[in-house]
Length: 111
Image (cartoon, rainbow, N blue to C red; front, side, top):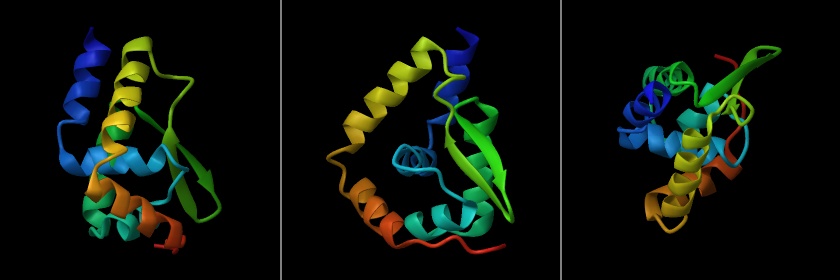
């Protein structure tokens, strides 16, 4: 139950839901999250860190970038179900749709 509570706390903010929405599409760097959500580097990093600390994301280094993606292998059953539900709910959300459109145009920029 502890993992579920931690995951629920992590997704309790709109920005983190929006980030989950785009990293479920593809792995993203901080700069891509910034561009897709139109937020500052500090805000993107802080919220990515919260999702990572909750065990929802994994990070891997690729040259100058740290790339974040959903940690499919590391998620327990409850967290997987939670992410599936989030993805279904955000499918028709206009803000999430705009984020996805901006993600397509985003570029990895060295910070």
